Length: 138
Image 1 (cartoon, rainbow, N blue to C red):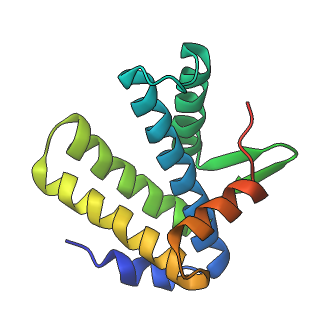
Image 2: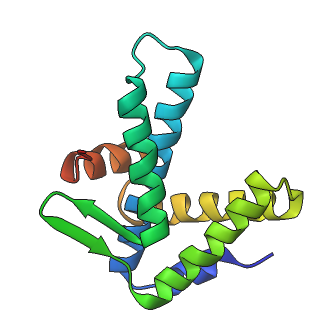
C-alpha cells in the first residue's frame, strides 16, 4: 500500500486545497445519493440528485471543478494521482477488489486528515468554510 500521506504532503498547498475541494464535492454527492436512496424527507429531487452525481463524476473524470466563473484545474502531477485513485475506486467499489477498496479508503482518510489538520482544529469548520467559499451550483 502506498504512503498516501507522503504523496499528498509532497504536493504544493494549492494542489492540496484543490484535492480537498474535490473530496468535498464527492462527499457531498455521497450524502445526496444516500439521502435520495433512503427516501429522506429532505432528499433532493431525482433531477437534482442526478445533477449532483453528474457534477461529481465529471469533476473526477475531467480533473476540473467548474465553480461559476472560475474553473479549478489540477496540475499534471496531481491529475496523475487522481487517475490512480480513480482506478482504485473502480477496482475497489465496482469490481469489489478488497485490497484496492482498502487502499482507496486509506487515500480518503489521508487526504481528509491532511486537509483538516492544515488549517482547522475541527473538520466541520473546514467543510463549512470551503462550501461557503465555493457553493456548488448547477
